[in-house]
Structure formats: C-alpha cells, structure tokens
Length: 292
Image (tube, rainbow, N blue to C red; front, top):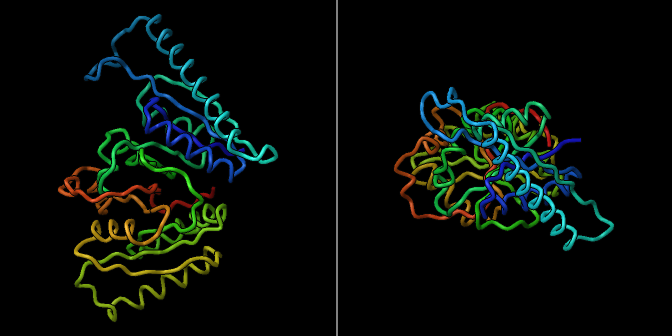
C-alpha cells in the first residue's frame, strides 16, 4: 500500500502539514509516515568523523520516538473526531533516522516507494518565500519524487482547482498525466497556465499551445483540463496574480535547473516581495511519470 511521507521537526508548520497529509491520505485510502531526521550535533566539515557518545544518540532517539508517538496518536484522534465513523481512517506510522533531512527523506522514499512527500513551510509571502528554508531547497534540488509544500496558514479544504504552471515543455506532458491522477481523487479541475511577459505575441506561439494541449488531452485522458494564458511583467508576478485571483486551491510546477523556480530556490530579488500566497505548492521533478 502506498504511504505518504511527512517530515517533521515538531513545529506548528510541520504539524499543519501532517494534518493536511492526513486528508490526502484519506482520499487515497492509504496512510502517512511521520519522519524525523536526527542531525549530527556539529554542522562543520569533518563532523561526520567525530565519535559522539552512543548514549547521546540513544537518548535523543528515545525522545524523538516519544514525540513521534504522541503526534501520531493526536493526528489519528483528530481525524476520527471529525470524520464519519464508517469512513476510511488513515493509519499513521513513524520513523527517525540519523542524517541530514534530505538524505533521510530520500532514503525512506526509495526504500518504501512512497509516491509523495508533504512538507510544512513556515511563514507567508510571495511564491519565492516558500523556499527560504535550506531543507526545502536541498530536498527539491535532489528529489526524484513530488514534494507538496504546505504554508503554515493553509487549512485543508476539498481541492476543486489545481493550476499547473508550464512553459509548454514537452516534458510537462508526462507530469500533467501524473497530476491528473491526483486531481481524480478530488474530481478537481486542472488549469494549465502559461505565464509570459507582456511582450508575448499570440499569433507567434499559438500553434505551440495548440500542439501542447492536443498531446496533453491524448496522454492524460482526463476531461477536466483547461488552459489559461496569463500576461504579466514576469513569471513570478503572473503566478502571484494567479494564486490571489485565479480561485485555485493548489499550484503545481516542475523544478528544472536554470528554470525560474531554480532561481527562487537559490535566492533572488523576488524573496523581497511582499505579496502573499496561502495555498499548497506541488513541486515535481522533470519528466515525472509516477501516479498517486
């Protein structure tokens, strides 16, 4: 059975992401696994070669296990309190390992073939400000699996519309096919969104749009896919406008080297934007072809 992985540092943002993951698991009829990475105490070159006392690791791991057990029980009780007793109730397991956040997550996903990682993000701000945390940047850079980022202020509601931001790359067609498998869980619309600057000439690239949508229709085989072109001064502003005014419940995109998302991950002037986004963000690796 597929299981959703939920990394946690026991913060309010991580707890919020876990609650959101429980609702997705309910619709997938699966469970979630809470995961905590126990870091080496010294963040410095050569730290891995330092021989730390075994009892220190044992003590830390025991404390983490107690916290994970408490959180898992809380999530299950909360879900049952607000659900029909006859409905499906997601199970919650937990695990802790020594290592960096990105390595622990990647190892768990690889070992158990998990289809999705749901991760909390603290703070609110423009699209770029999702990525202020180094753990998120590091994870997305190496991930070969989808990562769903949940803002600290986001509360779960049935997903009715998912916007997928694309530059019309052929690789995105496989990703949209994968996204359709999630949209079906909610009977949600997928709004394919092409954001361009104001110099965009419709008659020059309309054939590219038509060809792209034709291939999407053939591949995805989902009848709730629509298209919208958004003009703005740049892509970042276009996506911020879409999240604020497009009546969407989730934004999805692909992370590629040298793509605008990569610039946001590395940090740029856009991190200084004051615009706000409060909806979950799904980040796919290039040419992802899995399903949910």
